[in-house]
Image (tube, rainbow, N blue to C red; front, side, top):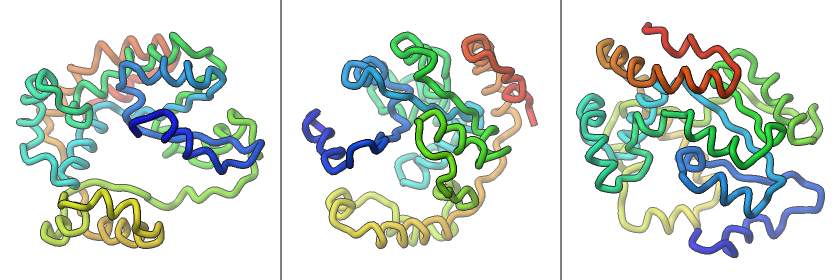
Length: 239
């Protein structure tokens, strides 16, 4: 959205008393999102879900491959990240940079109260998704007994079984952004299901690459542990 007015129109039909919000992976690494959200809505409640940064980096890489926007190998993409960042590439190509969570979380801590922040780990969600949902509902002050499906996978990444089909369904082409605005939601859901059925599980990360990334994130994870008051030692285990 290019204007605040356009963004706020998203909420124009929201009934009184309804809790409304939005979600985006770009808010956390943004230098300005926390302060801008606070300026617009100082009583906002912030929910953050964190994944092991090593696994997140690899998943993000395969997401870019899924969208046909990354052609390098994972190792070459990691090596190119510093230059790409200097050249102004978006955060979605910062496989390491966007996983350095400490400064990102601290920006929200600096402007929002502790009571306005709720931070979960992906492992929390995997261990007991229903409990996490109920915790979120309590945090938002809405009914805790609202039924939620926690068994469905809504997004996955990996190599395409058939790249031609994948490119047709998810690759870039002129007019795709326009089609997204006019195609009915049901058709989008059908398309997404077709994409997911055409995706294989990613290959295992090169063990040497995993060791390198664990060491790259080690200091930041230690600082994050102190900030959150949580043990994140399982993120440092090399499997």
